[in-house]
Length: 440
Image 1: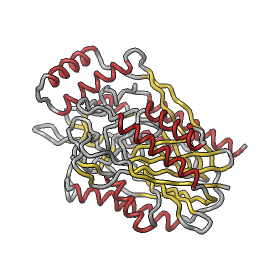
Image 2: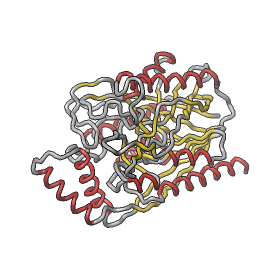
Image 3: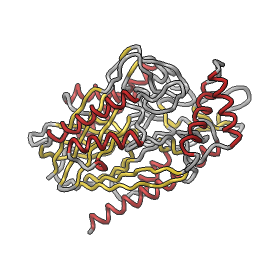
Image 4: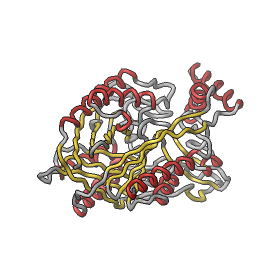
Protein backbone atom coordinates (compact mmCIF):
# COMPACT_ATOMS: atom_id res chain seq x y z
CA UNK A 1 0.00 0.00 0.00
CA UNK A 2 1.09 3.53 -0.77
CA UNK A 3 0.00 6.38 1.48
CA UNK A 4 0.26 10.07 0.61
CA UNK A 5 0.05 13.26 2.62
CA UNK A 6 0.31 16.84 1.39
CA UNK A 7 0.20 20.44 2.54
CA UNK A 8 0.99 23.95 1.30
CA UNK A 9 1.53 27.39 2.81
CA UNK A 10 2.55 30.98 2.09
CA UNK A 11 6.27 31.83 2.42
CA UNK A 12 6.29 35.41 1.09
CA UNK A 13 8.68 37.69 2.96
CA UNK A 14 7.79 41.10 4.41
CA UNK A 15 7.71 44.18 2.20
CA UNK A 16 10.84 46.32 2.20
CA UNK A 17 13.14 43.28 2.19
CA UNK A 18 15.73 42.42 -0.45
CA UNK A 19 14.75 40.39 -3.50
CA UNK A 20 17.15 37.70 -4.73
CA UNK A 21 19.24 38.78 -7.70
CA UNK A 22 22.88 38.92 -8.75
CA UNK A 23 24.06 42.32 -9.93
CA UNK A 24 20.74 44.11 -9.49
CA UNK A 25 19.10 46.16 -6.78
CA UNK A 26 15.52 45.91 -5.71
CA UNK A 27 13.54 45.67 -2.51
CA UNK A 28 10.01 44.37 -2.34
CA UNK A 29 7.60 47.29 -2.70
CA UNK A 30 4.55 45.08 -3.19
CA UNK A 31 3.43 41.48 -3.73
CA UNK A 32 2.39 40.61 -7.27
CA UNK A 33 1.50 37.08 -6.23
CA UNK A 34 2.25 35.05 -3.11
CA UNK A 35 5.23 32.74 -2.77
CA UNK A 36 4.36 29.24 -1.59
CA UNK A 37 5.89 26.06 -0.25
CA UNK A 38 4.15 22.77 -1.01
CA UNK A 39 4.80 19.29 0.36
CA UNK A 40 4.02 15.83 -1.06
CA UNK A 41 4.91 12.93 1.26
CA UNK A 42 4.85 9.38 -0.17
CA UNK A 43 5.32 6.24 1.92
CA UNK A 44 5.32 2.54 1.09
CA UNK A 45 6.35 0.18 3.86
CA UNK A 46 9.66 1.41 5.24
CA UNK A 47 10.40 3.55 2.18
CA UNK A 48 9.48 7.21 2.26
CA UNK A 49 10.21 10.42 0.42
CA UNK A 50 9.00 13.93 1.15
CA UNK A 51 9.16 16.35 -1.78
CA UNK A 52 9.18 20.03 -0.77
CA UNK A 53 8.88 22.73 -3.43
CA UNK A 54 9.60 26.36 -2.46
CA UNK A 55 9.23 29.54 -4.51
CA UNK A 56 12.82 30.55 -3.76
CA UNK A 57 16.11 30.88 -5.58
CA UNK A 58 17.35 27.87 -3.62
CA UNK A 59 18.71 27.06 -0.17
CA UNK A 60 22.37 26.49 0.58
CA UNK A 61 23.48 23.22 2.14
CA UNK A 62 23.86 24.40 5.74
CA UNK A 63 20.39 25.96 5.74
CA UNK A 64 18.92 22.89 4.04
CA UNK A 65 20.42 20.49 6.57
CA UNK A 66 19.20 22.55 9.55
CA UNK A 67 15.72 22.88 8.04
CA UNK A 68 15.26 19.24 7.10
CA UNK A 69 16.53 18.16 10.54
CA UNK A 70 13.90 20.35 12.21
CA UNK A 71 11.24 18.97 9.87
CA UNK A 72 12.33 15.40 10.59
CA UNK A 73 12.33 15.85 14.35
CA UNK A 74 8.83 17.30 14.29
CA UNK A 75 7.34 14.73 11.91
CA UNK A 76 9.25 11.52 12.64
CA UNK A 77 10.66 11.25 9.13
CA UNK A 78 14.24 10.31 8.26
CA UNK A 79 15.90 13.68 7.45
CA UNK A 80 17.58 12.20 4.34
CA UNK A 81 14.12 11.33 3.03
CA UNK A 82 13.25 15.05 2.86
CA UNK A 83 14.14 16.71 -0.45
CA UNK A 84 13.75 20.51 -0.39
CA UNK A 85 13.87 22.17 -3.80
CA UNK A 86 13.75 25.75 -5.07
CA UNK A 87 11.85 26.79 -8.19
CA UNK A 88 14.53 29.49 -8.71
CA UNK A 89 12.16 32.44 -8.76
CA UNK A 90 13.12 35.90 -7.51
CA UNK A 91 12.06 35.44 -3.91
CA UNK A 92 13.74 36.71 -0.73
CA UNK A 93 17.53 37.08 -0.54
CA UNK A 94 18.52 33.57 0.55
CA UNK A 95 21.66 33.07 -1.59
CA UNK A 96 24.87 35.17 -1.34
CA UNK A 97 24.88 36.17 -5.01
CA UNK A 98 24.91 39.93 -4.38
CA UNK A 99 27.33 41.67 -2.02
CA UNK A 100 24.83 44.49 -1.51
CA UNK A 101 22.13 42.03 -0.40
CA UNK A 102 23.04 39.97 2.67
CA UNK A 103 21.36 36.62 3.17
CA UNK A 104 18.16 37.20 5.18
CA UNK A 105 18.76 34.99 8.22
CA UNK A 106 15.62 36.23 9.97
CA UNK A 107 13.52 35.08 7.02
CA UNK A 108 15.30 31.73 6.85
CA UNK A 109 14.43 31.04 10.49
CA UNK A 110 10.78 31.83 9.74
CA UNK A 111 10.93 29.59 6.68
CA UNK A 112 12.28 26.71 8.76
CA UNK A 113 9.32 27.05 11.11
CA UNK A 114 6.83 27.15 8.23
CA UNK A 115 8.32 24.07 6.54
CA UNK A 116 8.41 22.23 9.86
CA UNK A 117 4.71 22.90 10.30
CA UNK A 118 3.96 21.77 6.74
CA UNK A 119 5.91 18.54 7.31
CA UNK A 120 3.78 17.77 10.35
CA UNK A 121 0.57 18.57 8.49
CA UNK A 122 1.52 16.35 5.55
CA UNK A 123 2.19 13.40 7.88
CA UNK A 124 -1.08 13.98 9.73
CA UNK A 125 -2.98 14.01 6.41
CA UNK A 126 -1.69 10.62 5.21
CA UNK A 127 -4.29 8.46 3.47
CA UNK A 128 -4.17 5.39 1.19
CA UNK A 129 -3.55 6.57 -2.36
CA UNK A 130 -2.69 5.56 -5.88
CA UNK A 131 -0.23 7.40 -8.09
CA UNK A 132 0.20 8.29 -11.73
CA UNK A 133 3.51 9.13 -13.39
CA UNK A 134 3.75 10.28 -16.99
CA UNK A 135 5.89 12.19 -19.42
CA UNK A 136 4.94 14.74 -22.04
CA UNK A 137 6.29 17.69 -24.01
CA UNK A 138 5.95 21.45 -23.48
CA UNK A 139 8.38 23.94 -24.98
CA UNK A 140 8.99 26.69 -22.42
CA UNK A 141 12.80 26.97 -22.41
CA UNK A 142 15.54 27.95 -24.87
CA UNK A 143 19.30 27.66 -24.62
CA UNK A 144 20.55 31.05 -23.45
CA UNK A 145 24.31 30.60 -23.90
CA UNK A 146 25.31 32.30 -27.14
CA UNK A 147 28.42 31.84 -29.30
CA UNK A 148 30.01 34.62 -31.38
CA UNK A 149 32.30 34.93 -34.38
CA UNK A 150 35.21 36.15 -32.21
CA UNK A 151 35.05 32.75 -30.34
CA UNK A 152 33.55 34.32 -27.20
CA UNK A 153 30.53 32.88 -25.39
CA UNK A 154 28.11 34.73 -23.14
CA UNK A 155 24.74 34.61 -21.44
CA UNK A 156 22.21 36.05 -23.90
CA UNK A 157 23.85 38.96 -25.78
CA UNK A 158 23.31 40.84 -29.02
CA UNK A 159 25.35 41.14 -32.17
CA UNK A 160 27.44 44.32 -32.13
CA UNK A 161 29.69 45.75 -34.83
CA UNK A 162 31.44 43.05 -36.88
CA UNK A 163 30.86 40.33 -34.26
CA UNK A 164 28.06 38.03 -35.37
CA UNK A 165 25.98 35.32 -33.67
CA UNK A 166 27.18 31.84 -34.65
CA UNK A 167 24.74 29.67 -32.69
CA UNK A 168 23.68 28.47 -29.28
CA UNK A 169 26.19 26.63 -27.14
CA UNK A 170 24.04 23.68 -26.08
CA UNK A 171 20.76 21.78 -26.31
CA UNK A 172 17.29 22.29 -24.82
CA UNK A 173 14.90 19.91 -23.06
CA UNK A 174 11.12 20.36 -23.49
CA UNK A 175 10.26 17.10 -21.70
CA UNK A 176 7.64 17.46 -18.96
CA UNK A 177 7.15 15.11 -16.02
CA UNK A 178 3.95 14.79 -13.99
CA UNK A 179 3.26 12.88 -10.79
CA UNK A 180 -0.10 13.06 -9.05
CA UNK A 181 -1.91 11.16 -6.29
CA UNK A 182 -5.58 10.37 -5.72
CA UNK A 183 -7.33 9.04 -2.64
CA UNK A 184 -9.81 6.14 -2.43
CA UNK A 185 -12.59 8.46 -3.63
CA UNK A 186 -10.55 9.35 -6.73
CA UNK A 187 -9.99 12.90 -5.48
CA UNK A 188 -6.64 14.45 -6.40
CA UNK A 189 -4.47 14.99 -3.32
CA UNK A 190 -1.50 16.79 -4.90
CA UNK A 191 0.23 17.37 -8.22
CA UNK A 192 3.97 17.52 -8.87
CA UNK A 193 5.23 18.62 -12.26
CA UNK A 194 8.61 19.43 -13.79
CA UNK A 195 9.92 21.26 -16.84
CA UNK A 196 13.09 23.17 -17.64
CA UNK A 197 13.68 26.92 -17.81
CA UNK A 198 14.79 29.80 -15.61
CA UNK A 199 11.76 31.60 -14.11
CA UNK A 200 13.29 35.04 -14.66
CA UNK A 201 10.39 36.97 -16.19
CA UNK A 202 10.66 39.69 -13.55
CA UNK A 203 14.38 39.55 -12.77
CA UNK A 204 15.44 42.73 -10.97
CA UNK A 205 11.85 43.84 -10.26
CA UNK A 206 10.70 45.48 -7.01
CA UNK A 207 7.97 42.98 -6.13
CA UNK A 208 7.58 39.39 -5.03
CA UNK A 209 6.28 36.91 -7.59
CA UNK A 210 6.27 33.14 -8.01
CA UNK A 211 6.73 33.75 -11.76
CA UNK A 212 5.43 31.23 -14.29
CA UNK A 213 5.45 28.25 -11.84
CA UNK A 214 3.13 30.28 -9.60
CA UNK A 215 0.81 31.28 -12.43
CA UNK A 216 0.70 27.67 -13.66
CA UNK A 217 -0.25 26.66 -10.12
CA UNK A 218 -3.15 29.12 -10.25
CA UNK A 219 -4.36 27.65 -13.55
CA UNK A 220 -4.15 24.10 -12.18
CA UNK A 221 -6.12 25.01 -9.06
CA UNK A 222 -8.83 26.60 -11.18
CA UNK A 223 -9.24 23.21 -12.86
CA UNK A 224 -8.48 20.77 -10.02
CA UNK A 225 -9.34 22.56 -6.79
CA UNK A 226 -7.28 24.06 -3.98
CA UNK A 227 -4.62 21.36 -3.78
CA UNK A 228 -0.84 21.49 -3.21
CA UNK A 229 0.99 21.95 -6.53
CA UNK A 230 4.73 21.33 -6.56
CA UNK A 231 7.08 22.51 -9.31
CA UNK A 232 10.64 21.31 -9.75
CA UNK A 233 13.00 22.72 -12.32
CA UNK A 234 15.06 20.55 -14.65
CA UNK A 235 18.65 20.92 -15.86
CA UNK A 236 18.18 24.67 -16.22
CA UNK A 237 21.72 26.05 -16.00
CA UNK A 238 21.87 27.26 -19.60
CA UNK A 239 18.12 27.45 -20.30
CA UNK A 240 16.08 30.68 -20.32
CA UNK A 241 12.56 31.73 -21.27
CA UNK A 242 13.23 33.62 -24.50
CA UNK A 243 14.91 33.10 -27.85
CA UNK A 244 18.41 34.53 -27.72
CA UNK A 245 18.05 36.09 -31.17
CA UNK A 246 15.00 38.01 -29.88
CA UNK A 247 13.08 37.27 -33.06
CA UNK A 248 10.06 35.78 -31.29
CA UNK A 249 6.78 37.69 -31.51
CA UNK A 250 6.32 39.75 -28.38
CA UNK A 251 10.07 40.19 -27.78
CA UNK A 252 10.52 41.03 -24.12
CA UNK A 253 6.81 41.53 -23.31
CA UNK A 254 6.80 40.14 -19.77
CA UNK A 255 3.07 39.46 -19.55
CA UNK A 256 3.19 37.50 -22.79
CA UNK A 257 6.27 35.61 -21.60
CA UNK A 258 4.89 34.57 -18.21
CA UNK A 259 1.54 33.52 -19.66
CA UNK A 260 3.13 31.56 -22.49
CA UNK A 261 5.23 29.56 -20.04
CA UNK A 262 2.47 29.10 -17.46
CA UNK A 263 -0.19 28.09 -19.99
CA UNK A 264 2.15 25.60 -21.66
CA UNK A 265 3.21 24.12 -18.34
CA UNK A 266 -0.29 23.87 -16.84
CA UNK A 267 -1.92 22.78 -20.07
CA UNK A 268 0.45 19.87 -20.59
CA UNK A 269 0.05 18.82 -16.96
CA UNK A 270 -3.74 18.76 -17.35
CA UNK A 271 -3.42 16.72 -20.56
CA UNK A 272 -1.17 14.17 -18.86
CA UNK A 273 -3.53 13.92 -15.88
CA UNK A 274 -6.46 13.42 -18.28
CA UNK A 275 -4.73 10.69 -20.29
CA UNK A 276 -2.90 8.83 -17.50
CA UNK A 277 -5.12 7.52 -14.68
CA UNK A 278 -3.49 6.31 -11.45
CA UNK A 279 -2.41 2.70 -11.07
CA UNK A 280 -1.88 0.54 -8.01
CA UNK A 281 1.33 -0.95 -9.43
CA UNK A 282 3.79 1.66 -8.21
CA UNK A 283 6.90 0.45 -6.41
CA UNK A 284 8.65 3.14 -4.35
CA UNK A 285 12.43 3.17 -3.95
CA UNK A 286 14.71 5.90 -2.65
CA UNK A 287 18.49 5.95 -2.34
CA UNK A 288 20.93 8.84 -2.03
CA UNK A 289 24.66 9.37 -2.24
CA UNK A 290 26.87 12.37 -1.47
CA UNK A 291 29.30 12.89 -4.34
CA UNK A 292 32.61 14.51 -3.41
CA UNK A 293 33.85 16.85 -6.15
CA UNK A 294 36.69 19.30 -6.68
CA UNK A 295 36.33 23.09 -6.73
CA UNK A 296 38.27 25.39 -9.08
CA UNK A 297 39.56 28.58 -7.49
CA UNK A 298 40.13 32.00 -9.12
CA UNK A 299 43.63 32.75 -10.38
CA UNK A 300 45.77 35.13 -8.30
CA UNK A 301 45.35 37.74 -11.04
CA UNK A 302 41.56 37.39 -11.00
CA UNK A 303 41.48 37.54 -7.23
CA UNK A 304 43.60 40.71 -7.18
CA UNK A 305 41.26 42.31 -9.73
CA UNK A 306 38.26 41.26 -7.64
CA UNK A 307 39.58 42.89 -4.48
CA UNK A 308 40.46 46.10 -6.34
CA UNK A 309 36.99 46.20 -7.89
CA UNK A 310 35.26 45.59 -4.56
CA UNK A 311 37.28 48.45 -3.03
CA UNK A 312 36.05 50.77 -5.80
CA UNK A 313 32.44 49.69 -5.24
CA UNK A 314 32.76 50.23 -1.49
CA UNK A 315 34.16 53.69 -2.18
CA UNK A 316 30.97 54.57 -4.03
CA UNK A 317 32.16 54.16 -7.62
CA UNK A 318 29.48 53.05 -10.08
CA UNK A 319 30.60 49.97 -12.02
CA UNK A 320 28.87 47.70 -14.56
CA UNK A 321 26.70 44.94 -13.05
CA UNK A 322 28.92 42.12 -14.31
CA UNK A 323 31.98 43.70 -12.67
CA UNK A 324 30.03 43.62 -9.40
CA UNK A 325 28.99 40.01 -9.97
CA UNK A 326 32.40 38.64 -10.94
CA UNK A 327 34.35 40.51 -8.28
CA UNK A 328 32.02 39.46 -5.45
CA UNK A 329 31.76 35.91 -6.79
CA UNK A 330 35.51 35.43 -7.10
CA UNK A 331 36.22 36.88 -3.67
CA UNK A 332 33.54 34.76 -1.99
CA UNK A 333 34.76 31.62 -3.75
CA UNK A 334 38.25 32.10 -2.37
CA UNK A 335 36.97 32.81 1.14
CA UNK A 336 34.65 29.80 1.28
CA UNK A 337 36.82 27.20 -0.49
CA UNK A 338 40.39 28.54 -0.60
CA UNK A 339 41.61 26.34 2.26
CA UNK A 340 39.80 23.19 1.12
CA UNK A 341 38.71 23.23 -2.55
CA UNK A 342 36.25 20.33 -2.29
CA UNK A 343 32.45 20.20 -2.13
CA UNK A 344 29.78 17.55 -1.53
CA UNK A 345 26.79 17.15 -3.84
CA UNK A 346 23.83 15.06 -2.59
CA UNK A 347 22.26 13.02 -5.37
CA UNK A 348 18.93 11.27 -4.79
CA UNK A 349 17.42 8.54 -6.96
CA UNK A 350 13.70 7.81 -6.53
CA UNK A 351 11.67 5.16 -8.32
CA UNK A 352 7.90 5.47 -8.60
CA UNK A 353 6.61 2.58 -10.68
CA UNK A 354 8.02 2.82 -14.22
CA UNK A 355 9.54 6.23 -13.59
CA UNK A 356 12.75 7.41 -11.94
CA UNK A 357 13.71 10.81 -10.58
CA UNK A 358 17.23 12.09 -10.05
CA UNK A 359 17.61 15.13 -7.81
CA UNK A 360 20.78 17.16 -7.38
CA UNK A 361 21.67 20.62 -5.99
CA UNK A 362 23.21 22.47 -8.95
CA UNK A 363 21.99 24.55 -11.85
CA UNK A 364 22.97 21.62 -14.02
CA UNK A 365 23.54 22.38 -17.69
CA UNK A 366 20.94 20.86 -19.98
CA UNK A 367 23.37 18.49 -21.74
CA UNK A 368 23.97 16.62 -18.48
CA UNK A 369 20.27 16.24 -17.77
CA UNK A 370 19.75 14.75 -21.23
CA UNK A 371 22.68 12.37 -20.69
CA UNK A 372 21.23 11.13 -17.39
CA UNK A 373 17.95 10.42 -19.16
CA UNK A 374 19.64 8.77 -22.15
CA UNK A 375 21.55 6.34 -19.96
CA UNK A 376 18.66 5.51 -17.62
CA UNK A 377 17.17 1.99 -17.60
CA UNK A 378 13.72 3.36 -16.68
CA UNK A 379 10.95 4.09 -19.17
CA UNK A 380 10.56 7.61 -17.77
CA UNK A 381 13.37 9.58 -16.12
CA UNK A 382 13.19 13.12 -14.80
CA UNK A 383 16.03 15.28 -13.45
CA UNK A 384 15.30 17.82 -10.71
CA UNK A 385 17.75 20.64 -9.97
CA UNK A 386 18.33 22.87 -6.91
CA UNK A 387 17.36 20.07 -4.52
CA UNK A 388 18.81 19.21 -1.10
CA UNK A 389 20.99 22.32 -1.21
CA UNK A 390 22.09 24.93 -3.74
CA UNK A 391 25.55 24.68 -5.27
CA UNK A 392 25.40 27.04 -8.26
CA UNK A 393 26.02 26.32 -11.93
CA UNK A 394 27.48 23.05 -13.21
CA UNK A 395 28.67 23.92 -16.74
CA UNK A 396 29.96 21.81 -19.62
CA UNK A 397 33.48 21.93 -21.05
CA UNK A 398 32.13 24.16 -23.83
CA UNK A 399 30.91 26.74 -21.32
CA UNK A 400 34.14 26.69 -19.33
CA UNK A 401 36.23 27.13 -22.47
CA UNK A 402 33.86 29.82 -23.78
CA UNK A 403 33.78 31.68 -20.45
CA UNK A 404 31.37 34.42 -19.55
CA UNK A 405 28.72 34.27 -16.84
CA UNK A 406 28.07 30.65 -15.75
CA UNK A 407 31.40 29.65 -17.32
CA UNK A 408 34.04 31.54 -15.31
CA UNK A 409 34.94 30.43 -11.76
CA UNK A 410 32.98 32.37 -9.15
CA UNK A 411 31.28 31.15 -5.97
CA UNK A 412 28.17 29.93 -7.79
CA UNK A 413 30.12 28.49 -10.76
CA UNK A 414 32.78 26.75 -8.75
CA UNK A 415 33.17 23.23 -10.05
CA UNK A 416 36.00 21.71 -12.08
CA UNK A 417 35.22 20.79 -15.71
CA UNK A 418 34.68 17.09 -14.97
CA UNK A 419 32.02 17.58 -12.27
CA UNK A 420 28.96 17.38 -14.52
CA UNK A 421 30.26 14.21 -16.15
CA UNK A 422 30.86 12.71 -12.69
CA UNK A 423 27.27 13.56 -11.76
CA UNK A 424 26.01 11.77 -14.87
CA UNK A 425 28.05 8.68 -13.96
CA UNK A 426 26.90 8.69 -10.33
CA UNK A 427 23.26 9.21 -11.32
CA UNK A 428 23.53 6.34 -13.78
CA UNK A 429 25.01 4.08 -11.10
CA UNK A 430 22.15 4.85 -8.72
CA UNK A 431 19.52 4.26 -11.40
CA UNK A 432 20.97 0.87 -12.31
CA UNK A 433 21.25 -0.02 -8.63
CA UNK A 434 17.50 0.54 -8.28
CA UNK A 435 16.82 -1.52 -11.39
CA UNK A 436 18.92 -4.42 -10.01
CA UNK A 437 17.00 -4.27 -6.74
CA UNK A 438 13.78 -4.58 -8.75
CA UNK A 439 15.12 -7.70 -10.47
CA UNK A 440 16.38 -9.12 -7.16
